[in-house]
Structures are given as C-alpha cells and as structure tokens.
Length: 122
Ligand SMILES: [Zn+2]
Image (cartoon, rainbow, N blue to C red):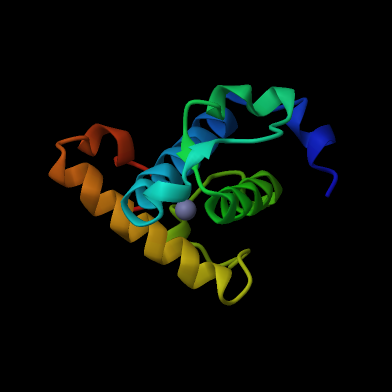
C-alpha cells in the first residue's frame, strides 16, 4: 500500500490523529468483541505508539485501513471527517467508520473523556 514510505515522515498531527483512530476503534472493539480482543499485531515500527490499543483481528484490519486513508488524505487543513467533501472511505467502510466513531464518541463522553475527542470527529 506504500504505507511504510509514508510512515517514515509522520507529522505530530498525523501521529495524534492515528492515536485517536486507534483509541476509538479499541473502545468500540472492547464493547463488542471483547473475547477476541488482543494487542495489535505486526505493527510497523512507526506505529509502535499504537501498541497499547487492543483490538480483535477484524477491528485491526479496519484500523489499518482507516490509518492508510488518513495518511492519504489530500486536505492540508483537516476538516472533521464528518464534514469532509472528499469521502475517502469507500461505501460500506464509511458507514463502519461512522458507526465506530459515533459509538466510541458517546462512550468516551459518558466516561467524561470529552477532552480526547474534542476537535476530532464530532
Ligand atoms: Zn473488534
């Protein structure tokens, strides 16, 4: 996917965004697939900071896809994905993203961790 090349030059903002993606995916996974959840596997070195987030295989596949999309986002100023006009996620995945982000956003709000999601997806 040419991902490794891009990973070598991650900006602070990108690293942070990827962390938010991993956080949201792991919150969703913990609530829905806890039995299959485990540490992320075969992460490239540049994504080592995502290691603490646990996911099942399915959610990890989704997360890696989302990361790839995020790194390929052509917009310099990141709008929240909700308002984006590029629609980089193919149909199906887009609903998946929405479902996961909505669920985890609410879960984090309930836990009082609004600080983690402010300025991102909502
Ligand atoms: Zn899962």
